[in-house]
Length: 387
Ligand SMILES: Cc1cc2nc3c(=O)[nH]c(=O)nc-3n(C[C@H](O)[C@H](O)[C@H](O)COP(=O)(O)OP(=O)(O)OC[C@H]3O[C@@H](n4cnc5c(N)ncnc54)[C@H](O)[C@@H]3O)c2cc1C
Image (cartoon, rainbow, N blue to C red; front, side, top):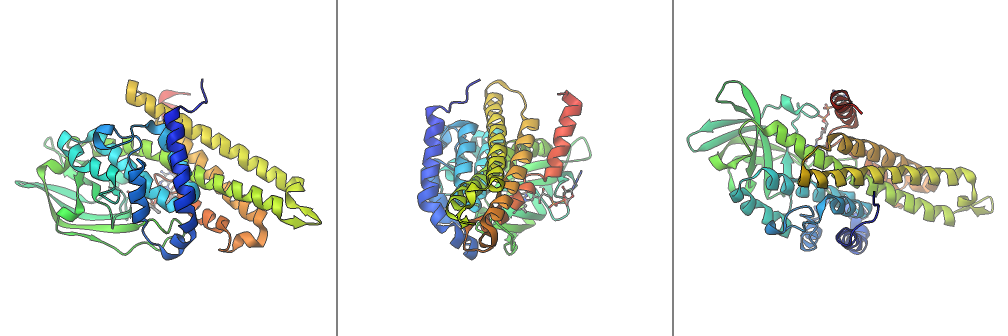
């Protein structure tokens, strides 16, 4: 066992940290207020290789692996989780295309994502009536001579208004009878009939764009199918395994930022004639936050390492990815909450970043599969495969 990062991993982490510190953190509060999409920041991040951290150099990626990706997401989210989630979904979309796409699809879509020509990628799975249970979706792709016709609506789509690449899941009829989910890859600007709802007025991560999408008789070509007909559910589950490492790492960034701010504040703020950091009650909170976040970090990095191993040698990391997402988002939530407690009344105002961190961290317990669903995944894996 080796806990040392290699040179590439350190380089990616440090690059993300520098960018986050100089370019993201100073504007995070304003982005939260204005809900402005971070288009310029994302373009610069693409130039730094952060929009394809685990994507092959053949398609403009950094080819640095999932451990480096986890470290980068944590650094970006420490400064601005709204940018972090946009980066995470874009990386995930690029990886899914690389895993399941045809050579032509990879050539057409991935370099645009990694170089920033496409502002973002969008993962269009959830629907208003099908969140935890995507198999219940109603969007349909009907086969016609010229390709497919998409009809239906998606909900909660991160970057839906700005993305240059959509992966859209839909029901398809199978030649052997019955229906299965299939995935389709499209550039939304190239097709008529796609419309966006107005951005969701969210509690947190307000600088990320979250919209509903409607597909009304959208004609897409035959070769828009991503992977095999009927493989959509499998593709979604593989993508979510990786995505959960991203969300766990993002939550970790938020929790780490909250801890760092709480340590600084506790050393400065005086009550009863001494810094509050001198009180054991405060020290215990900081110690618990640090310990839980360290455990979260180890779970995220283990799952990331296993994903790297799986890419080389095969194998699964479903359980470990769900554990990382579950534990990290809960630990980060507790850390952000305790940080506000340590800031006292000041932490409850927008003057201090801890207020935003608590709002931003809340959704990490919901998206990429709620934490109840992570427990379902972990328990199912335990009963199938044992400890
Ligand atoms: C800001 C944001 C961004 C998002 N971005 C995307 C995106 O880019 N792409 C995308 O496809 N989706 C996205 N989502 C959707 C997200 O993945 C869903 O919100 C999530 O999967 C939960 O679905 P739901 O909201 O419909 O809740 P529901 O599925 O209705 O769940 C409601 C409650 O019931 C619980 N529940 C459901 N089933 C079970 C069960 N079997 N056992 C125990 N409890 C259960 C849930 O845990 C939850 O507490 C985003 C959501 C948000 C809020």
